[in-house]
Image 1 (cartoon, rainbow, N blue to C red):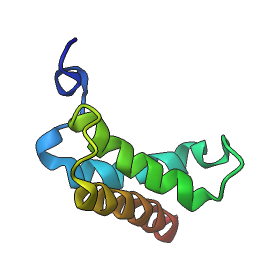
Image 2 (image 1 turned 90 degrees about the vertical axis):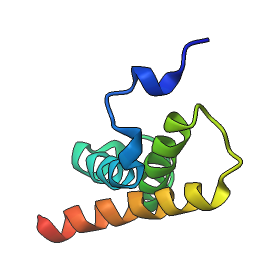
Image 3 (image 1 turned 60 degrees about the vertical axis):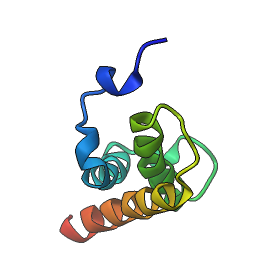
Image 4 (image 1 turned 180 degrees about the horizontal axis):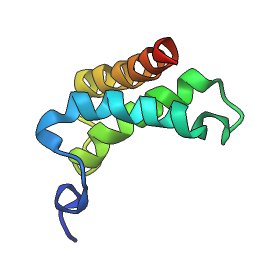
Length: 83
């Protein structure tokens, strides 16, 4: 199977910045209304998804997943403050 990080357009070396951008993009594009969960869940999932995409789905780094999830929420919050 191919390495997923090679197929991604995001720089995985800047994973935390990408997680914040993913949360902001989720809020901007309105993807926070897809599933019947609060918007914060969608923002955190976007941030955690960046980490999982960069590590090929490896879930052993739970602290880094939590940080990326928090940054996804923070990115969406920052976008709301800029609007």
